[in-house]
Amino acid sequence: MVIDFWATWCAPCHVLTPIMKKIAREFEDRITFAKVNVETNRDLASQFHVRSVPTVVLFKQGREWDRFSGVRNHSDMLKLLEKLIH
Image (cartoon, rainbow, N blue to C red; front, side, top):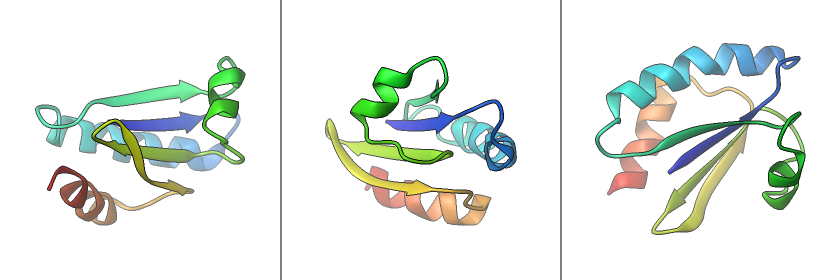
């Protein structure tokens, strides 16, 4: 599972969104993707210790496996997700 924590006022979030949408289509049969708006889900963002947006949290076998803040390009995301599923 991959969770993208974002906010409407966050410019980098708007850069990451189309990349995440494309990646989600490419991995739709293998990984579940979710977007969480930190403005309307403050408790959930706090639970995951989100300090800045965008923050992307990756889970493997029900546990947090990795995370990053900021924008990653499509190629970097592909590499990361290939590691996640293997």
